[in-house]
Image (cartoon, rainbow, N blue to C red; front, side, top):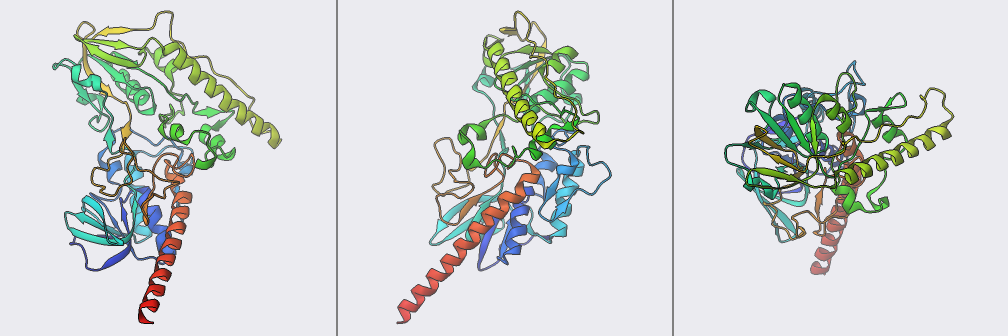
Length: 432
């Protein structure tokens, strides 16, 4: 890894990559294969988000054998285990070093704008110019906090997963975790095990077992080709890109973490948080329908896996199984008096969104999302990578970066070649 702490250099680069996480480093790998001049700008250190925006006990949702980047893969002695955050940081940093990636660290981008037929990237270390830009800043820059947060009584602490480190940092008393995706369930489980009473409020979610028929669920999703499904093959790609992360946890015992597990442990269950009024949290009454839909989709996924497995004629697979329906009780919680129930902390595990406030190129939709077709934006030479279902269902995983980066840099290389060819033709015409 070539790290730099100097001001921007003179001249125009072919490509400027924004972000030195796994997606940006994968793009850099293929740019080097194409012999394309480029630099990678990183606001902090390599793998900055993994270093500074994760809680202490977090592990990857994917097993170690699935941790791979172009020309680089996990080589430890626990392929079925799950990386801790220090291990993820070491893995990504090691990749940058192995590839001698041209990273400019501690370089914070404040704006990107078109400048003639180039892009001007303004940073705290000066301006960089590039014929192309690849945005690889990820999808989890800003935690999403619901509007109901403004109505929470002032004596109740609220925080996001970016602010949460461990249960030791929380107030004594009960905790309301809002959000039923992977983050919400993991935090609810950890906080409850610390001895605090926990209520989890959940809306739409993706239920998924950790193991199925003797294999990790990620093995099945990989082997059946589900993770390789292309974005232009997905029925509703916009919806697919907005789905919450599946209810999974990486753990030593390979446990399945779902709502049944939590309620069996003593966590209270409520529906989607609708609002807070006079210190009373109000929840949707559609919890039964939401859970039934998640159970139905789980069954369909397992049916697809069984159909594939039966066609393989492999005896080593365990027998098919089905999981109990989500148990919500006869009268789920519709309201919760926060003070009466001694709720002292609310954790907003309600998702994340990217931050493009610095992007001054007209490629954003009304919700502030980059408009793109498989990572190719409407602005010539401007690309994005590292987003959910960017080009495949696996795009947001570490191992999904390789195929996406290969496709995008191939498109980019063709764009630069056409650009150079057209420039040569124009010069010939002028000289004639």
